[in-house]
Length: 217
Image 1 (cartoon, helix red, strand yellow):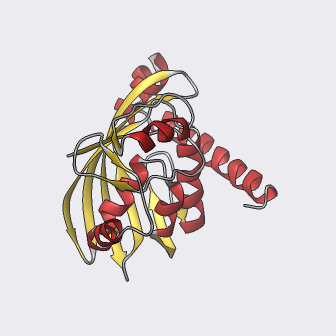
Image 2 (spheres, rainbow, N blue to C red):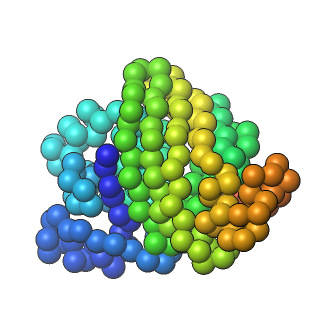
Image 3 (cartoon, helix red, strand yellow):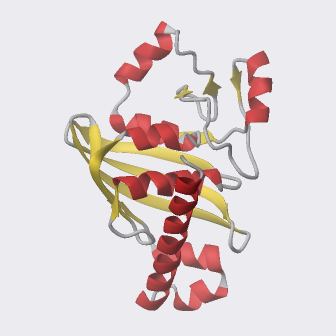
């Protein structure tokens, strides 16, 4: 299972002096991350050089799921978005039935606000038509300041080298106990709380998308 920790722009200056550099981050991420290539060693990052034949060859041999989760771990929401087809759909316990524009905006929103984020992932199975990935995300939930470690199972379907469907599954009760504290412990198993969290999440996403449109992005 790969383990990758997000880096800030400030850490990149240190990485320039040492090409492979282990870093941890707390606080918000940059909107775009300049690192897009990750070595096989846990927590070791390699600077991306578009002119490097080595990096280009590696990118060509990486699977769709590997490219997606390597970008995810580095906070590169832009690369993640490029891997979705225009008619892609996404769902999980918090964000139900998103279209391609919404899922791209969701990753942009979540990763640009992420605090203390790290990711472990394992591509359990993958073919030309789909993949199954098990991943664990650790972060600080911004609304409460509580630490969360969430285990997710992702099922992806591909077409023409792009993601056309993604379904993420995790225990909402386990997540809510960590993220919300006592309310999650007492009510996290109920459809009522999940529906409330989902409604708030969707409202926040659409507000974020409107703000980004106003900024002309």
